[in-house]
Image (cartoon, rainbow, N blue to C red; front, side, top):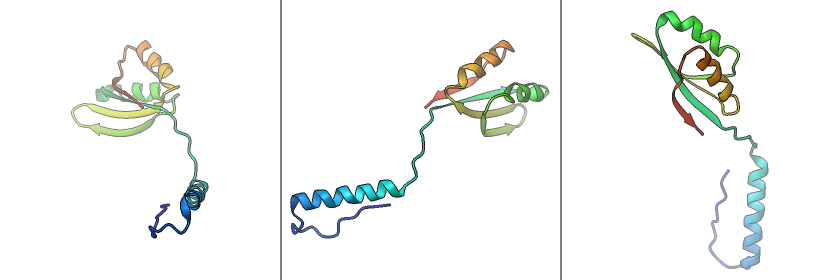
Length: 106
């Protein structure tokens, strides 16, 4: 939604103009859906084809979203997860001797 001022005159007066903008902003905010901003962590894994099953089993208990997958000579996948879930996931992988790569935080 956009608020546009077509007329540049002074008929509303300063107070009237302020009130018109306030009302337009209220209407615009009420018309839009509100969505929570959840901090996320993005990370990647590079692994060989024989590790695919192991990686999938390690990821299964966590609510990860796959962002990118490339399966060439090696397997590369990029994921994202809620920041609050990341420490548990990282620890889970470290216990298996697997290091998560390219960690980015929102």
